[in-house]
Image (cartoon, one colour):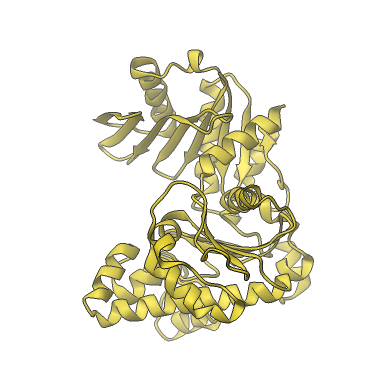
Length: 393
């Protein structure tokens, strides 16, 4: 058996999975939280068995040492599992990294140098890579959220601002959630047995993004220079008039950091309804809460706009796919969005839509002749594992 340890390093967290790329099985799943705080929490799951430790975890180096210790203590043994690589999720690859990349000192430095484009993510990603390379003597592969969208046409990634300013500061559309969009769009093609599909993928979690994919190639996506642009999200505003930023500075007196916090952490569903969990928003809306009803309406409106726009970009539509936490689990949202898009020939079967499953599935009515609607569970860890193996082969 050959396995890949997939790491996702956040500013104060470390998520990990030990994955068998061939079978798709996750042999172990874990999370280290509150790194750098007085008491950190480590949770390590192997099958139905869960081990939890609470103790000081001063930095990512200690976090990974503790994780490796748990693999030795409660299993599965990394030696016996045949670990062949460590796959690292990296949020931003800029224009320098458009494919999964085997990490050396130059690549590690390059990821850190992209911090201005992803100040909340790339420094933590680089730290995780640094400590993992010190502790695990196997190939390390960086898999970039932005890589799948390196194929965007120039007209899709270019912002209409002064060209010299844009070039000097690397301002363009990069897109995010690329590993998920690539994995899901490929699964759709596999399930349907067609590679020539015009697809729209809706990755709807606390973060949310849409992509337009033609014959497996990304041609547009909703997130931009940063993950703030596009759809309404749990705490992010998505699209807004850029002059709102000037207005908040000049009239409301907010500084740059306050505006950044407002738009990234206090907006979206949370900004309108006071809660960012879609389940809570839906429950409040069902109880008649006006703010929750409005939040859902705004959320749906933005989704419908993007699907309509991307159907135009693609010159038609063959498949609309829902994925990620909200996309996979909110049957009412899927029904409402598809109902609003009936003019495109989309439809769902209520009974199929209500089914919960971890398997990819078509939820359009049997015999439906228009574009299909699908639900495809995403698996970014498995995708990273497989991309890592391909990169070292």
